[in-house]
Amino acid sequence: MQERHVLSILVNNKPGVLSRIAGLFSRRGYNIDSLSVCATEDDEFSRMTITVSANDKSIKQIAAQLEKQIDVAKVADFEKDKSVFRELLIIKVNVKPSERSEIVDISTIFKAKTVDISADDTMMLELTGDSAKIDAFIEVLSPFGILEMARTGGAALGRGRKCIKDQV
Image (cartoon, rainbow, N blue to C red):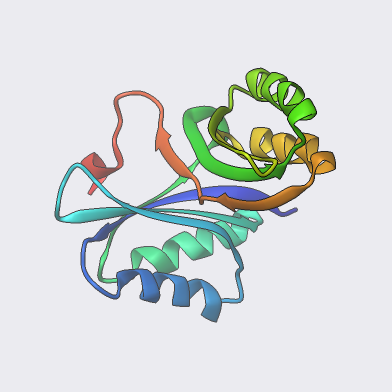
């Protein structure tokens, strides 16, 4: 059975690493659901957070292939209850002035932030949360007319004192 897995990969901070890692997934026939790359607290490393739908056996194979890569320092498959995962959504909705209060109420429920209200009947909102929360927010706003949206890949960290860098 395929499940969503969140892989956190600590890689050397060098040009071309992203391309090689993405290519590994492509060559193996796995689709990346989301991908986020960022700097870490150590200039030597970058963190890649990749979500992929696969079964446990496939994830173990992917992790083993990733760990063989020269620029990969560590791979962690985060378990849902032992990690925190968040993504960001910026969404622009079509809204009549008479509907703005309804959008504000919806935003309050989801703890979204209004980042722009324009005179030409649009609102732009920002929301962070797990994938299910983002999906639900999009679904609730759909009847108003979504004009545009941008959604990041996720960012994840393991809970507690243990750090991926400590395992290198």
